Image (cartoon, rainbow, N blue to C red; front, side, top):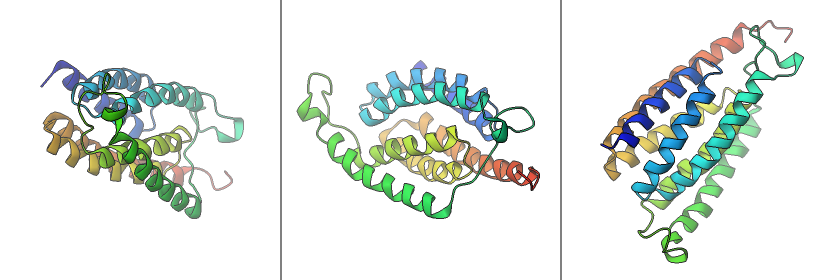
Length: 203
């Protein structure tokens, strides 16, 4: 196990635990996590995951600002962005959009070593499973930035896929991390639903 893997896992778990509690400090902790994860994924040739960290870096900054600066009607008791829900049709449409994106990026990922061998010297490992994690994580992160309860439903699916993928790839510590993230995502879903139901009906 490398130091990158170890500390990436530690900061990742802390960030998700804070997110599950709707704690705004999840975003700055997440910034540390994605920097470490970027270099680790490059080392084990999970290139879509590596590129995903650039997106996560930007969205961690965006999420930090968004949660801290809601409009007056979006404020909770802490003057932060409150939890909200999506329409069912919107959620289904977004999920199928993610599956379409998975097929597209999986095809691209499987050819990176052919198009840019000077950067990607080895073929991408499990390009479609890895691309599913990439695409759905992008979609779900935007849902989390807006504090939508349904983000946790997709995070649970992503975390299960990642748990299996990293175990097969040999990144056992990351596999354990994503198993724990699955449990945390379930807790996050329950906690956000509970918080949503606690708001006054007039909201």
